[in-house]
Image (cartoon, rainbow, N blue to C red):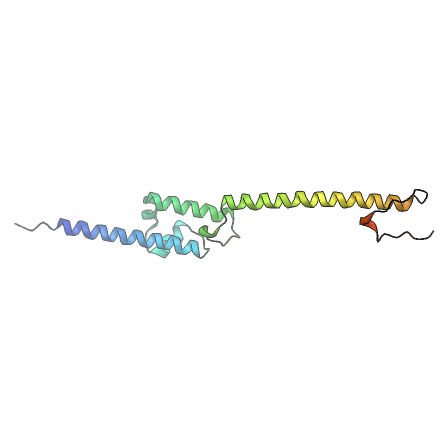
Length: 143
């Protein structure tokens, strides 16, 4: 009677599968880190696996599709996914920019009002001038 070697064959198949999977994962990470397009073709070529095998791996397929779609939306963005700004970070930056715009708009309106008052005072010489500390340097030209 022959010895049952099926356990060794199953172990070898599992190791080979794990090795193949690790090559594919490493290829995805390497391509993304380099800012290169992550597609089934590029991953298969870099990992030395078939595209059909990649399509059969549900988790790898999902990740490749997400990275591929992200790269298509922003072709000029060579930034890897792990270095891209989070939604929360972008929201904070937007809020800060809006607050700055509000402050600048208020400052601008105050300056416009002050300028309008100063120009109005300059145009009407018959009006008695009230000293304005903000416009001490404004001088009237003799007419």
